[in-house]
Image (cartoon, rainbow, N blue to C red; front, side, top):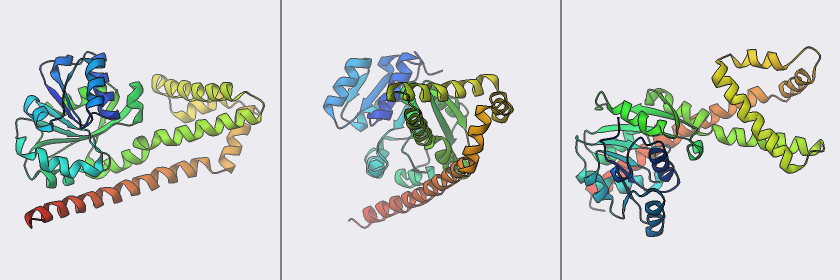
Amino acid sequence: MLQKKRIGFIGSGNMGEALVSGLVLSKATQPENIFCADIDPELLAAIKDKYHVNVTQSNLEVIQQSDIVVYATKPQILGMVLKETAPALDESKLIISIAAGVPLAAIAIGLQKKLRMIRAMPNICAFVKESATAIAAGEYVLENDVAEARAIFNSVGKTVFIHENVLMDAFTGLSGSGPAYIFTIVDAMADAGVKMGLSRKDALFLSSQTVLGSARMLLESKEHPGQLKDRVASPGGTAIAGIHTLEQGGLRTTLINAVESATKRSRELGELMVKDFIKINENESNGK
């Protein structure tokens, strides 16, 4: 699907490189069809040497060369980058933003054009090709645009299509922020193993492998987690004793509250981004 598409990255930092790596290693497209821009020449040189893609410090050059343009900059500078690059964009190009917390409404304000736009949010697990990525489409996308976006992000994991205005913040609270919850749980389980006499190295390995195996079993068996839990928790056994303690400690409620808090914070940040982009446009109109 992407073999004949030229894909450009505005910003080639950690997440940008993760996507380049996924596209190249999965052979979703050829290195000569990938164009990367960044202000850091050393970073670009390393990416070129590693993946044999095209690199430049010019954002406009990447846009001119690309059919699909992925904005992979930090949210704080996205407004300025959109202003710089907007004149080079037209309806022939698919625009994808992975800037965390920036809704399509803000991007539309920044570009001031009716363009084919998609917002995508991969999570940190893209670095090991196990990202859960949400994809939301703007008003003017074409029939194949979502499929092409999914092909890009499927190279670093799995994707779901959602309605941005309703569910993107919920995705952020669950899967965008979720790895941090899991890392905290793994760390706590490793601490418990050390308390019970295991070495730190063994405790951390066992905790991590347990989470990995449990997740794979859930995905491959397609059983409800409650059913799998019951298969482990035999009557009067160790697992049910542990689960009782987790419930006493409010683990389930705490995780639900964590997702809710992160969702609300994502919504707040999105609203602030819209206001900031409006202010940028107003200042430019007033010649400030």
